[in-house]
Image (cartoon, rainbow, N blue to C red; front, side, top):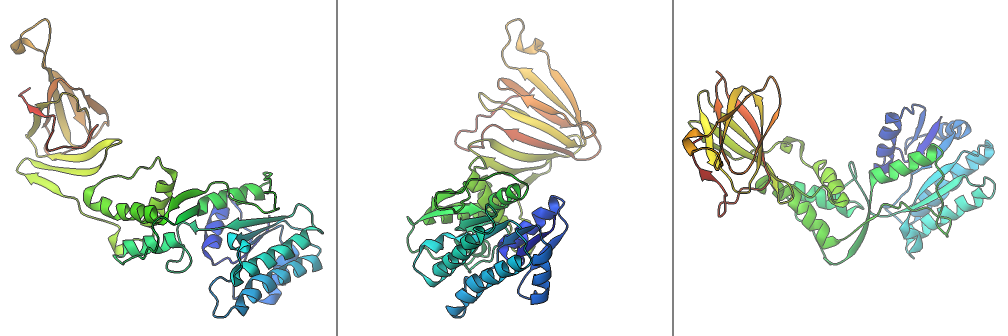
Length: 378
């Protein structure tokens, strides 16, 4: 299939192109500002599908709205009619088409031209009214509040909020691309009553909440608190935020608690899932010798050789001196998780000649005021 994409260098265009290539589409006609009239005529004569994404939303003069949004759309349709090419067209319009401003009026006029064209090519025109689209590669300080907030917060710049309670309906770029490619591949999608199409996955929030969420991503490098990725909006915003980090700041240090035995470092924590840490023990060192009432842990040795020992605190059939000590030999050569149940005092000993590296998960974050940790030799 040969696919024509106008506005190929734009935010939506870039995301569409890479996903089309992921899907195996290779015959892409990319139309941008430097595309010649002759090239556009050749594209329209040969294409099987059109994504019409080109448009003007930040012109120097209001006349450019008409030139970029209305006249270009009319030119595109005239070329298709001239070639008798009834390829389906997806048009990226805007919800501002319902507004009485110059941009909205130009988008509405472009829509009307497409609806007239549809009379000659029934069921071939798909007008999508989009608003507040966000995701990777969106230009900050332009027309996306998400892009601006992500960029400014990631770069330690201030953000402006005039009304924290102002409501937003956000659309994630991947949700748009997924629906459009489904339509390209023949999935039937019903329009709304006004003959326009709308992306159904819309995330509602407020301007103040949006800023709070994005600020929490920056703060998470300090407090190690993981965001709630079960919230679809939070997950998509976090993925978006990371793309605005300065490239020299992709990494960040962790606080290592170091002594002669090795080190212990917290990596990530959250009330919803507990805490993940990494423990490094020097050869011959034993760590632990404690037990918990409620806290549980999982140990995963990823490098070195060690032994994990357990002793149950209370048994019915023997004295403390007679209690059996359980032993599990662990190694980075064979990854296995060892569960640490409550009521068992336990320790881990490095029996190798190199550092013993253990990934540890606890079902609760460490609370200094209520550590639920009681020292007792195994």
